[in-house]
Image (cartoon, rainbow over all chains, first blue to last red; front, side):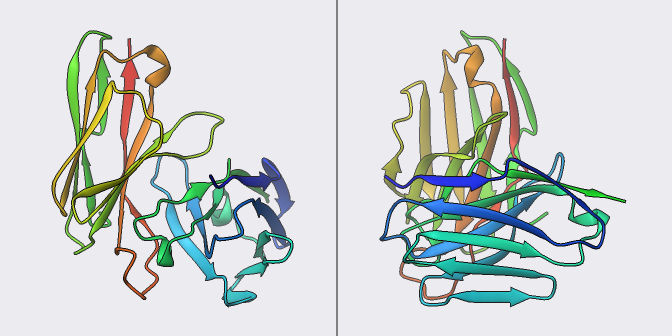
Length: 115
Length: 116
């Protein structure tokens, strides 16, 4: 089955700096890669996703890049703010839109924004 | 609320008890999932249902028994659990695999389960 590795497990950056979280996956058939943000005591929420026919996607301060050859994808957050502090999970799936195949998640990255 | 509601929010049960977790979604989704979230571990997929049919059982022990009576409701029946089963159990839903619209998952708030 799919195996998703995520690094680092903890990332501390100064407010205003950029943060990068990296994930690798093992199943070359995976074609959908979402990122979730989970604040303390709250549910995971989808923040951005990318499909395998696209190399990069951006939404305001958040961007995701995908390298299918190397089987890795990354989350980039620019101009970090205190409200960005949370645990971020990457995931991979072979299903279209993640539907009904189940997502395999990375272990999560605890992002800490230092004031 | 995101449209996926889980009850109860917290549950403490003994190892000999039988209890059930409930998940309900009103998003018109056809796929529903159970995930287990433990400390220092990734979100672990347990079960997948698509149009009420179980399509995946990720080697989950038989003391966890899912039930999906319709596309809007999902249950997780628990019996003779172990202390290591204590975790946050998250339900999620999504469009089925034939959809070309990427919605991703919508998670419920989870049930915090403690087995004593």
